[in-house]
Length: 438
Image 1: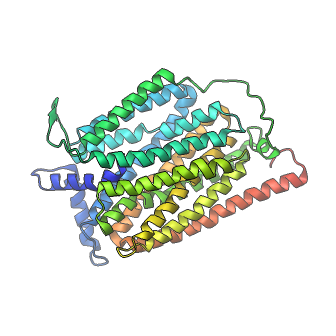
Image 2: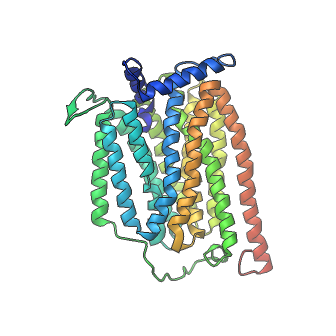
Image 3: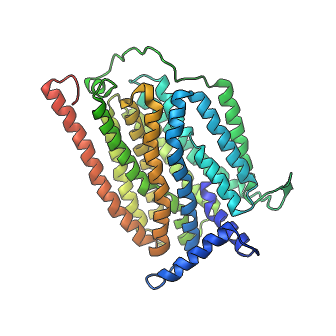
């Protein structure tokens, strides 16, 4: 809900705090940016309009870096305390974060809201662990696809609702000593939804992390047995490491592009929050259709299938970088073509890598291992927005996206090698008649 609001929110706090007398957190940050701008002005002309992009990238990176710190802790907590207890605890953190946002009349207060939210963000991670707990090997991939579909639907509806709610400006209204900002109505609706969700989870969500005897799935293949818990722990650890590195590299570049997209439209086309909401809604709807149709039909028992689907998403992501680098005010159609490629990527790469890892994890420590995997992704997501937005601020859109396309081409080659290596390993094991993949 908050994503399309970022450009206007940053501009609101800039106009409010730069014009005010006295020191402020945002004023200090802008002062440092101006100092940096004077130092680099001999190499490039940095537009003041780009300051909004860099500030947004800093906030996005901070949020994801805090998730990088919290994800392993949340994962271990869910293994020891239970999924239900941990999810409810993180929901209370989200409620507190959104409550602070409702009354965030200053940039420092808004920053505090993002800090609390980043440290308590565990919904997706825990949802995946819960789905893995209650599904068999045969239907886990399709069940995890439901998590991806839910995320895509949220990505469709949330930004559109958030953008729509900015029509209602409650700025300046005081309630209980707190003062509303122009985005308080959107934040208030978000708070209401979180409270309703928490009540629902408290009433209906059972504990799923329990020790139980699982019957072996009749359709389980030799490949899956080889990748299960009985496999050499060093082999499993190596595969998880490769998947984590891929998760980091992909999200490092993808999140930078994803986060800078609304700022690109703000710079080139002066998009409002509502227009950004429509663009993100298009991406979300397309991703939902891909998840519900193509991905669920293609999902199978074998983990290798997940890697192959992820590789398709990596290919379309590279194409989206190329298309967005070529976007100009005279070629807006390329923006939507790039958005379509982003939708396919959103529906495949992270979801399929997650499904793959969930299949090779030890069920007894699944929460912890999935937390480590997600943590690597959040590290990439924490670095991507600030570095990519910094390049955008310094070099402009075309150069930034071109450099990102080259870097992603390197990752494309790396990930293709991972998939090919995996195929060779399984092929050699089948030829030798081994019962385990060495």
